[in-house]
Image 1 (cartoon, rainbow, N blue to C red):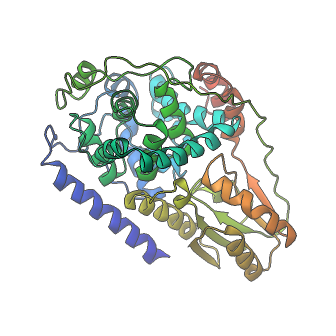
Image 2 (cartoon, rainbow, N blue to C red; image 1 turned 120 degrees about the horizontal axis):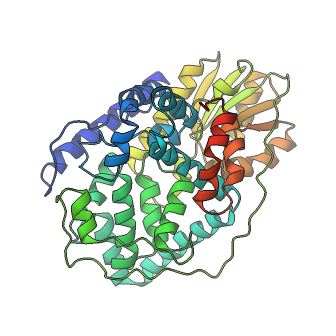
Length: 435
């Protein structure tokens, strides 16, 4: 497994190095320092957090909206890849920031941490949105087969050949590095939807296939927000002047963008569902199942597992091929977690049917209980749901452990972000981080 992790990190480094070489030939590329090394390990994530935390206060608040380019990311944390896989947790980040800054000083950054939490909690209570999105991707792909003009526009967009300044560079940067500045993601989504008039689901799918921080909730709901579906009737419109300002003139797509952004509509109503109840551990020995949802799950356990199994669901993000950089980061994240736990028996596999791997590992370990982190709506949850009946028939008990952070925050993600924003002090107090 250590060799697999090394190969994943080498692949990631080679791809990012190639991007840096390729990007220098693009207009407006800023040859600046502070290009983050996205190594899929907890140690690397904590190192990134340590380097950034001093800037999480007023510096972040005044500079966070600027996209200076792939090699100048000192104005933002770039922690999302590690937080998405919970190699570094939200609580890790908040604890480090609040040890250095007053809550009022780091307010903007703290809110950004909770935006990701809000999206996860909101989608957990409206799982039909994820199903509708998946159906939309399938319909969009069928539409490409029938509409040659749309297919040409789609291919030009994902290959960075649209002719739109900024958009093309971001498309190439995404594929090559697996990362984009948040402001660039918003501009990109707006141009995709309102200028290129492509199905929003296909744009969200493009992101989810390539982002190393690709998260079903944050990605899907951010695209819906830009399109006017999340907050009904409210869209985000990319403007050439705004892009020029916040890229410091690197990109100026004047007269290339749509002058209007009419909100999209949908016929389906997504009713709110209660958050599923998490499981409680018993005293039985167990097999620990590590997924790409939580690379630090071992810290939540009262005792060491009898064995560890790592399973990947990255390929289930999309019916299309997953980007090599995103796949390598997910592989590395799970391998890092499994290696750090260090149980007597441990392995990492990628399989469509998880039940076979889980049953084999449980049998080898001589246990009838499997423990894993709670899987929010997305590919991992779907894999576990499909495996559950087979495990029950084999008298294997599957327990999903949810973090206190999620239990404290998710119930407040009922409508807009403001409801959760008001409760941030209460959540911090519940975590022992207030004051």
